[in-house]
Amino acid sequence: MIRSTLLAAAALLLSSQLQAKTCELEIDSTDQMTFSTKEMKVASDCTEVKLTLTHSGKMPKTAMGHNWVLTATADYQAVAQDGLKAGVANDYLQADDARVIAHTKLIGGGESDSVTFSTSALQKGGDYTFFCSFPGHWAIMKGVLVFGD
Ligand code: CO
Image (cartoon, rainbow, N blue to C red; front, side):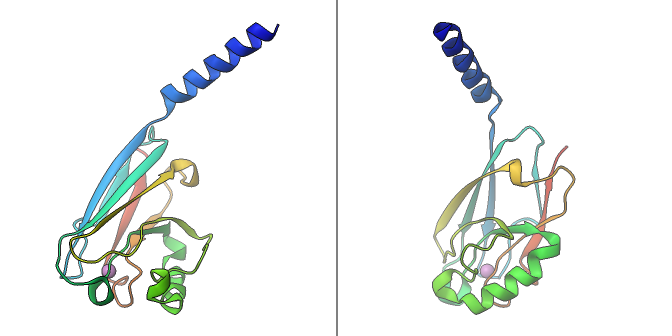
């Protein structure tokens, strides 16, 4: 009885490992206040996303800082406005903002940062926007993230 339970648990663990799939996304940012893409795609069989943000410019994060923040499109402007109040010490994001699905830290030229998040927070066909929450950047530095095929 114990043995069969252990076998069942082992089989369950194995199948969940086989089904797990981390998909990697990369995006660059510049001293010209741009992201390298306006659209990012996550295939429907990805269980996790590892997003890496690079900053290929030279300016410091206090002058030309960039982060990568993901929210539902309906939330993005309000999250950006609340982030402004949070200030640079908080990477221009309100602490523990439940509307934020994932975010990197704020980086300057020559730096990079990665964030890994579960796709369980995403709905297939949902409307998601990624943006930089640095003041004045979010109106321009934004794009859509598509989950699904
Ligand atoms: Co920025």
